[in-house]
Image (cartoon, rainbow, N blue to C red; front, side, top):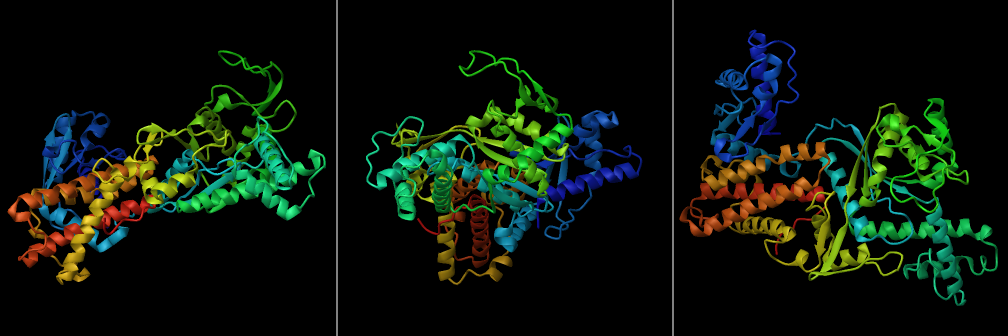
Length: 589
């Protein structure tokens, strides 16, 4: 598949190999950092390579002088791809050692032909080489319906998974069910109250520390329908576990339904309770002990104001500081049970044992302090055989016409993800969640995300696709459209600077896929789609003002087919980008 940036990088490396073979460069040069990218200023050319600057120190030569030699070695070479074989280019040296490339228009016209040939598969890459990646995301405590913050993590994780798949990785989407611990006991007690209420008992005000949400009324009623009065008048020790298991199952059904409204599914659900029950934590800590990474000690008091429950007592500690953490971390609580951290170590080691060495976790911003210790644990447990990347999602601030919408899960009046998706639609929600970096706070205003203006990125991108689709419908009516016709269009007729600018932008999609996948940053796709939409809208506006572009479908059938090919290329790339987001492109607006 045509990727001009990858193809030209191969040409640069081939030129370096020739210089090495001739003795002009020393053998064994590391070309891993040699890149070919668009120049920051389009006036400098179409492509630019840093080859001279990253190799100058290794060959002990001035970057400008080395750039001149590499540029000379490039001269006369031909681009190897069959899509633009024989197309010409010129190489110019610019300070402090860049080599800027100007390509013949035929190269860009060939890129458009490649887009038409590949369709939605354009941009598919093999850089992942089928490497297995485990992405754990959402993993919301099963104590109630999902809120908008969970929704952001869900979209980021799902889009990142889709992006990695497009880049050639084998991805498993995973949800970790936190169904062990104090929060499940609190849920069980909350549901038991609603269960008694369903049986006619007056329960009064929900005690502090329990979940007061109205969503548990239905769960209590369901338990009463299933078990009748079985759990009334019996000690907590008898009903806490079975009621907790019933409640967790009900909450997970609720969460799955919330996720399905966003079009999100998982390949695996892993239960914390089952890991503990199967002895995974004991085995994991035993392995750390055998490696000399567990000891009994007393931690230094935390900096600042001491928590009320802090005491300087001997604890079972993991030597996290040996692996980059700031302090060693407790593995056992004062009652002798395992800490959450011990359970999380066992869970991540379980991922490694299942064959995953590339681990990605998508967490809420409130877990920022947990990142270093978890990365230290993964490094220790796998002997450096696995790497953990944690993507923290900052808060989503909800507004309605500029007025903040408050959320409070414990007060029971939070705005659920379901309510938001029902209000604006899954497509809008998913796109908006990716219009900021995951580590930046995001403002979500119900009025703004649904308005039809260029200030709304969802509308702006979808409108570009709808405009392109409208053109293609009219072309079909005029019998000018067909796969064969577009594939054989005289694309050399596309010489207008605005037309070529759009093709250059579309040609950057494969490079964008690879760079965003390697950086684990799906939001780059949103930025790119907005740029494509802006360029297409600009061409559309220009067409109204200038006679040579006034009508895409005109009397010159050859030029019309070429321009239709360009419009189709825009629609293909926008649709491919939206597919990464799980967003359906609209045909008309």
